[in-house]
Image (cartoon, rainbow, N blue to C red; front, top):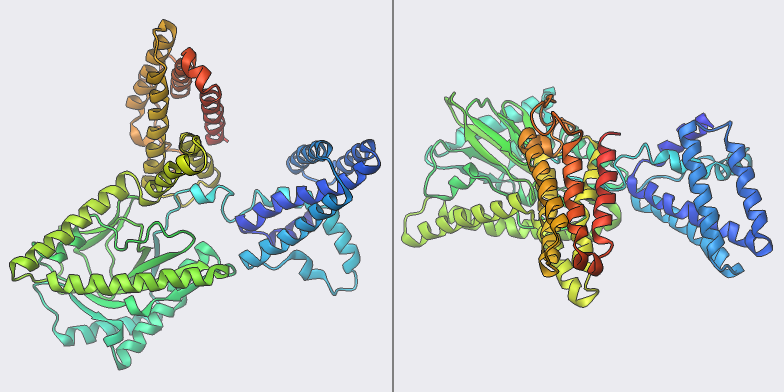
Length: 560
């Protein structure tokens, strides 16, 4: 079994693929038991018992325990469904079809395709089928990302170094060409890719397509499932200016997001900044990761063009010459969503060209209109960054969609969709625990936690009546929780130590010196205070119990 398990994992690495297998494999087995149930439900019970017992001495204990639990669940599900031969056949057919579809979506070859055609393919097929359930259970522990990866704030800031011989030659060629053009010392200078010619254009091409650059995306996303397109129409050579002020160059020194399509799902445009020459003055920072680096001599950083907040700042040590960079852009999207990825690529190209025209018009403003336009660029940049930093464009659109759903779909859409999401984010993040953008994670959970608490307060005030026990529970509970937050600090409150953002520290001040796990104890007492109010409990009987249940599960998850 161990050898089979190792082979199976190689063909099942993406969370989408494994997630669909985790749904379709039990569905197919339930369909099979449904057919058996038509003869006798006791026969289904016997088959399940024999199957589970047969795995006892083959599987690792952890995999066996989970497989046994899932098997009991499948048996229970098959017992409550009214099966017909058609329904059972459709369940098994759907299981097969959607598993094949999962491999098509992710670009992963099926394990079955690896052995079909071999002389012993029949015995391998029987073995594969018999152990499929525990193989899928095991694969859940070895995914590229978790099943909750879509709510995890992954760090999408990548670094690499262009230090191979050809790469160094190309960077020197570009450096010499730029200096020969005589760039301005008063403002930034730009040469766009479509205006380049000859050797310098070929050097730019080689750099954009080299394995050091493209490999960053392959490592993070996987080349089997994702397409990586170079966006030549957005690429440029850029020379930093030592002077900025009431012009659009000031944008670079502000916290800003480059593009407007952060709400565009399933695909992303990325910008890479490549340091062509020596630089000791200008540092590039990403406050939502957080991360910062002074890029010099072949250093490259890549970030999401439409989502990542960033800025540049000056170090105390100044450059003696120009700071020359290449801006290279990529569009990354699932291969099965090629038209969608191409649409994002087109939209970013159009936006970049329009923004480029406005930028050039305000780079050296000489008239009142040009100065007003420059101020508009700076003001819009500031407001966009504030929204992204405090709420997140994706989060804002999600909340607005739920608000619309309240009227068009169901009046509980907003409540259910926002009250518990921060617990899901906790669990997804702690399952992954790697490459987390801590600032973004903290923003997301604080945003949705604030909405969740606000709704509890709304229902409390709506149903308010004097209840001394309820008021005391709220006061005591949240006093303990607030005191725990003050003792830890905001970063450690939101698991900064566990996620590697800050060093662990022993806390001995109140309430940690007298109450075990005061954050958990205080929050649960406070939630019980909400639930104690009769009117709230009658109107929303499950709201607080679900809060407490998910809170305890998520807190348990952080210590596993």
